[in-house]
Amino acid sequence: MTRITVERRMDHRIDRVWDALADLGSHVEWMKDAVGLEFVTESRIGVGTTMNVDTRVGPLRTIDVIEVTGWEDGKHIDVEHRGLVSGHGRLSAASDGDASIVVWSEDLTFP
Image (cartoon, one colour):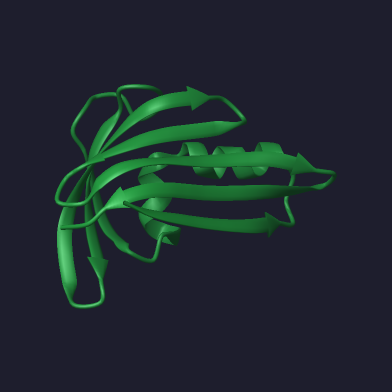
């Protein structure tokens, strides 16, 4: 299993940052490895939301099946990866005055 963690300070208030993070369909616009997304469930937010994410890293391409397993508004989104790449991750956001700290951390197993 490989741990990947990325942390960024965003010069935006937490409510604005959270709105962007909670819009799961927009993740392909800012995630470099995601090139397409299709919701499998009717839900678009919250626990149980499942999506197929067309993922590309260099010449490698796969469909990443992602299910939301935890959701606390304004704080974090937990996911399970159930495709060729498996594991779990957490996308979290915290206020830092008029800015926000966003952390994406995953434990993944690669084939």
